[in-house]
Amino acid sequence: MKSIKFNLIVVLVTLCCITNLHAQSSLFSYEQYVNTKGDTLKYRQLVSDYAKDTKYPLVIFLHGSGERGDDNKAQLKWGVKNFATSENMKLHPTIVIAPQCPKNTSWGNYSYENMSLQPEPTKTMTLLIELIHKAIENLPVDTNRIYITGLSMGGFGTFDAVSRYPDLFAAAVPVCGGGDVTKAESIAHIPMWIFHGAKDDAVNAVLSQNMLNALTKAGSYPGYTQYPEVGHFSWIAAYSDTMMMEWLFNQRKQ
Image 1: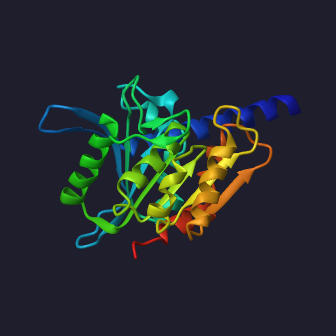
Image 2: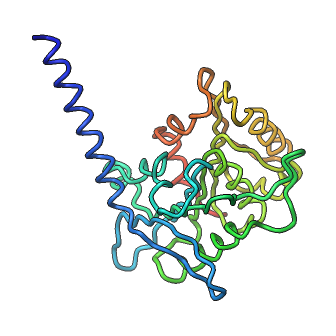
């Protein structure tokens, strides 16, 4: 009898979780950006509130390599739905844009032999920056509170974006990524909180540590959280961290 009750509880909890995740996904509208050349970037968008004459922070969320494609759904698999919980939307009403990187492309453009940033951004990154400027024109975006975050491939993309466009973002949260340490001085003014798993066998934590050390040497005060028993899935804890969320939404361009 106890076994039956336990199994029933497990089923009910699972159904509640599935229902909640579906409800959160439905809050993100299906969108696409097409530039004058006909290039297209699909994305999902959350507007958690829309009060007249109110400006809202804009969060750019960059997914990992496993969510690339053209279904405009996969990019919501990890992390970004934490911004769409009832609690977070109540405490931090925001606009979230979660673009989807096409297959065989990437957010960042590095020489992965030495992590040097290449001169030109990827086509996808170029489209993303165009999309951000379009959002500024058409949505009630507080331009002093534009944040960027991403996991794995998106973590590399986060460092790429702030390195190329250091005057655009008010804060950044790169998760299990890496960047070009030679750019640290030019981005030292951007508040950052870096996350990584110590046992990450997909992206070595040394890459985040290198950026932490370079930014600190350049006079920055980045946050750094390394989970001692976590592998590549450090984003699960990172985006569930209420202190990180509170910190992020407190950041404003100086």
